[in-house]
Amino acid sequence: MGLTGTALAVDAGNSKTDVALVTADGRLLGTARGGGFQPSAADPRRAVDVLAPLITGVLAQAGASGPVGHLSACLANADLPVEEAGLTAEIASRGWADTVTVANDTFALLRTGLPDAGAQVGVAVVCGAGINCAGLGRHGATARFPSLGRISGDWGGGSHLADEALWCAARAEDGRGEPTDLARALPAHFGLDTVLALIEALHLRRIPDRRRHELTPVLFGVAAAGDPVARAIVARQAEEVALLATVALERLDLLAERTPVFLGGGVLAARHPLLHDGLTRLLAERAPMAVPQVVTAPPVLGAALYALDRAGAGPEAYERLRGAWG
Image (tube, rainbow, N blue to C red):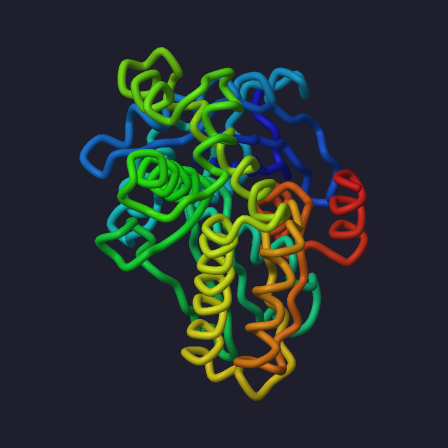
């Protein structure tokens, strides 16, 4: 049985995937969570397979099997138009919905922060496992970045910060770099005595790669304690976040207008004082009209709000939907 007047909302990040089933009047009928989303431009099918059991489970909660009216997906690693097109075609082929729209997951954060009525103008910077930025300006103008890592000029994100901390710790221990307490704190997190032992454990997969992200909070803890090397890494991350936001505002001709800058993802949502205070100070210097706001609501809400936008929902529907996520 299908469900009329409903939509599937998908937010698929590097570390987790959330799916929700919502109605056009803003009711939340079901949710599901799964693992990370890692599509390949050459073969999006395997990545989309990750969505299948989640969508089936959410539909089952509502006593349905699909299709729904629309599927709104905000997906990590959908960084180029060709990737968005490939994922749209693959998702549409599954028959889960009559229509499908796909956008990069940074737009989910952006839509979550934007108002539901009036001009939808603003910039979002997400810093979770990776880092990205997107913005909407007047008359439908858009600013975005490829966000493909070092080859597209990116710096930062939780995974990158963990690697930077390891790099500095390794060089401190063997004498090539400045002394830093990271050389003690990083291996100690895994019950090891030396950075060399940690390098060996990571290289031989005795510590799985998926646990590397645990080093990022350790980095922030060492930085908060005053370690100059760790503080320099965090300061660089603040610089990159402020730079992304400022460049997006400039592209959209919004530097002279009071404009929200939404900050999200695990690294920014944690509000580490050194990082948060640093980036807000830099924004105040470079884009004084920017209004930074940390968004902690789940990004799947943004994907669901896009579905309501498409349905032409009324104010009560938006209020009901936002209330479902607190």
